[in-house]
Length: 135
Ligand code: ATP
Ligand code: MG
Image (cartoon, helix red, strand yellow):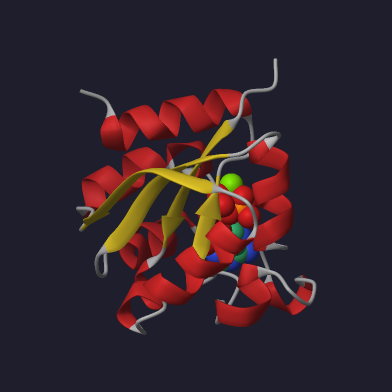
């Protein structure tokens, strides 16, 4: 089933460099509607839980430290085909491989500090939205 929602975070590097507005502008220009929005600091424990799927990867500890190094902006976005279209809008994980016109091409600094997160499936979009906005 394809749903019309995805989940994103603007990561600490992009928030620290005052790119919240620029990134939200690209998101809205890309045809997404912002359904939920929250600026929040993740503890290392919460960042670790969010990225638990990567806990066996060599970059996990660095990723958790980075994601808890400063506030992030979490959002739920709505658009037809939201998950796939948003992955296309953000571009490749490594900004060196990201296409022109993508958010990571414009704002990402490295493979780790890559400006934004985007859900990789409808199922995870729901889980991640719940993680931040579930009551
Ligand atoms: P995200 O899940 O944040 O949208 P992604 O789906 O493009 O990113 P994943 O493979 O899920 O990529 O990796 C999650 C995050 O872990 C990346 O966005 C990046 O911040 C970090 N990361 C991934 N690979 C590496 C690596 N080789 N070295 C350092 N950090 C990495
Ligand atoms: Mg991912």
